[in-house]
Length: 473
Ligand SMILES: [Zn+2]
Image (cartoon, helix red, strand yellow):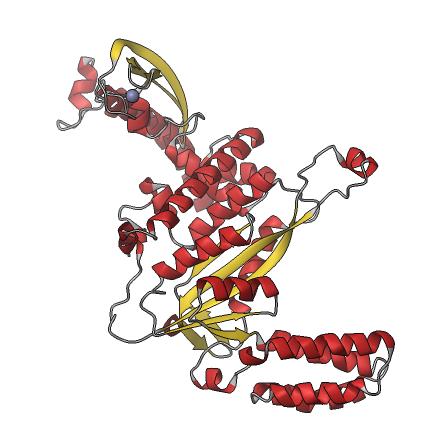
């Protein structure tokens, strides 16, 4: 360090960047800020922009120097097997994209005899061991913005807000990589729920002695994929239909006392989301783990609400056998409306007059009376309308034990599965845009990131993002 720096550096500073670079920054910044102050056309926005731009280089210099310091502390130990490394050499350069721009550090490399691999212990220490050239902070940016908006937009938004240039291909690769990591972590956390380790993930409320109801809602929506990209013509020639739409299975669970009614709307303060493209069994595993975190093992009452889909009730019988089952009231009503339109296709007033008392019957737990009315109609019907009404009789008949609404209303329980339906709509805003095609791996990875964010487990994925571990709250 030169003499001129020593005079101006605070005595406790041990970074070179706090010497001359700090003085240069001060000088450059002051000149720019003076211009902003004098120019009546410039607002606070210009001042903010000036500070952010001019400070970036100093931040980059500090980041590089400190990263190098940290890299130098890495012991010659294999980060995987903890064995001592041999054939050590030093000065291996690596360039990393950070939130302040690119930095280059030098680190040591050693041979691990046990793993039979070259190791760079500093990379693990800095959190950049798993391929890619992005720092943990940039990895997080790619994951967060890439899961919330289309990649082309995400790239532009990141550049505008942070100054980090991430080409679309890099952003896409990084978001997918983080999504894959999120999936692996999700599977690991879910597996822990089956063991004693799971207790650490359970979410507790202040008064655990109060009996509570756990509500679970399920639904599904479909996503457009192009698994057989470029093979469409070939598939058609082979007599196969190229598949485009696939199911994404969804569920939510929350404690009833976390659902607060504000005016007409119910707001759920704390709840878990499960969303997967990997099939019903994957949903079953993930939902069970999530329900356990939210008190499945301790709940006085477990209530499942969903529409009439058969797969849902099979899953519930299999995994949540003691749960009370409820058919979504609004779906049930829609089925009655469909019958009314079959009976009076051109007469909306008659249809309404016919359906009204039946809707009331449903609300008052008189589903048997609804079925009798439908059966009476059968005598006057032929052909397709007869078949349609028969189908509805079956629908109500097979869901009879799930249509007890009065008691649920008195307990303040939801009568429909609106919470999960609105969640599905929110995911669709991101994953079901016009012209969008996904691959099975691609959509699951990004859906998984979105779900980590919603379930407030982001810091588990990116520990630097929170000073304290939110997952333990
Ligand atoms: Zn090793």
